[in-house]
Image 1 (cartoon, chains in turn orange, green):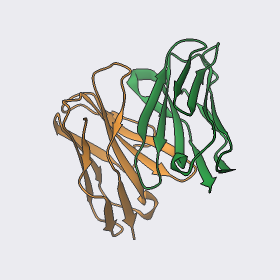
Image 2: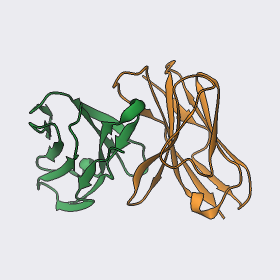
Image 3: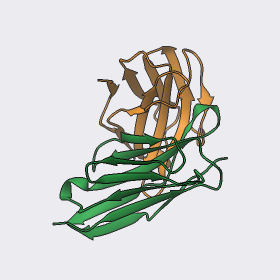
Length: 113
Length: 110
């Protein structure tokens, strides 16, 4: 089974802190994604990556950056956390460029105080 | 960019009643996927539809892809409390991005 893991299920940070959210997948997938999920807004794509050291902006990249130094790991970085970044963050991975199944991690619920 | 509209946003049903959620697009879709997210969980892939007019069944769940490939539906017959959750449709946008509908949250009263 594909496994996508995220470093924390719950995280509480203060405004202005630098926050790292880590995601690891064990299926050698090329594609990895970061979404945030908010009530009434569904899943919104923040950033995605097709390959190591490669990144593309999604629909809401402002206030975020990403890093992909190794194929299995995709990190989301909040340079200076703000209260409007309180949300559920979901990582996902998918193989190749095919219209294959996208596998999600368990999510990290981030609260910024 | 490509968008997909999903309705309704919420649905409360009595256990045993049927439930349907709809996804609509203004453009022709190459395919459509459906995901389910249980409360407190993460989205899990259910099915992918590719062909015009395609109908697929998974036990009490019936998935349909419209003839014009611009809409899709998920129908649950005789809902059970285990069906509770949010159901998302998702379509492929440009450059391999999966675009999700807003989701329909189903509540089932026992």
